[in-house]
Length: 80
Image (cartoon, rainbow, N blue to C red):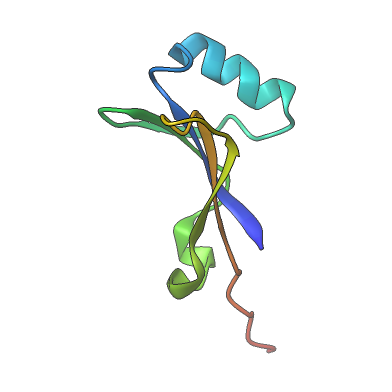
């Protein structure tokens, strides 16, 4: 399983602290989508994954699920 996005609760960290956490933990700081409750740091385009394989993995939990990873299996490339 590969990481597609890192999700960080807005209740847990500010946007600035979330960006610092991403860099400190070796993730990419390319595209961020901000929703009502989450900062979503895209690591890879969702189109590179088999959409039926997406799962959420909580890495810093508690009731508010502070930090989560969206993981999935990448699509197999067709040989040319």
